[in-house]
Image 1 (tube, rainbow, N blue to C red):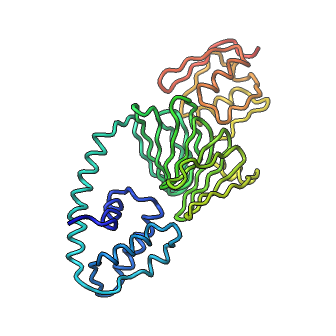
Image 2 (image 1 turned 45 degrees about the vertical axis):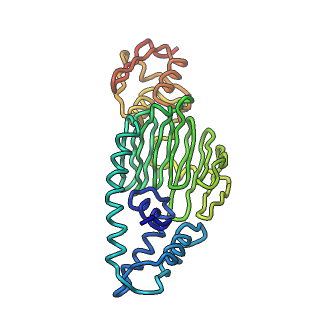
Length: 321
């Protein structure tokens, strides 16, 4: 039997290839079907077409799907067997093809639960996850790109690498950067992006060109496919960076404190060959800088050099100029 658009949509749902908006609407409709007493679900071609159009229409709400029920009650087992049998096979085959055919390196997946959780990706980027959030990072050498799928709320500090763009996929929405800092918050109905530094391009399945977002700007992508650009204020930025080590601006601060902050942010151990270096005071802004760049800046203001081995940084020299 030839598969309908509805069948294909349900296959994509089972294999996790639908957008967040489609997933929520499908689950709302399935919940309504399961809650309906004695409902036997076997849809006609016309009913499948009608439900498919509703599920894929950006104007359809979750409430609309929860209220959408078939006009008649017939055998459920036939429909479930027809869909389930093909989906089990498709899911297994799709997973094997995905896992073995798509070259991936440095794959990392983290799910946070409470508060703020910091993770350092394999490329050196930092992600500050808030609440219940999920991030998966991987690299595709053949595409020379860094990929992340994300849902929830987080502050990203992306390591700069112009030859390897950093791409964040949030359902239908794609964020593309080279190296910058920004926050993302996803909900059922929208994706909110706020840029702190650099430039970020936000696009969608319906709008591949997207919109460029600059520092102190915020864009909200709504389920109807529209982009709304707003400006941010200091209070919003403070809220985004709260309980993180994002702000690394130092004004006439002793190197002892600077070292402690760098160790905390980048999960490294910093050893000073000369203890007097801790007393040197510096004025420098390391915000949105990698560990390597921060160390380079220190050598510009102090008479020191550094070396890095594994997770240990050794700073040598006379210290204060």
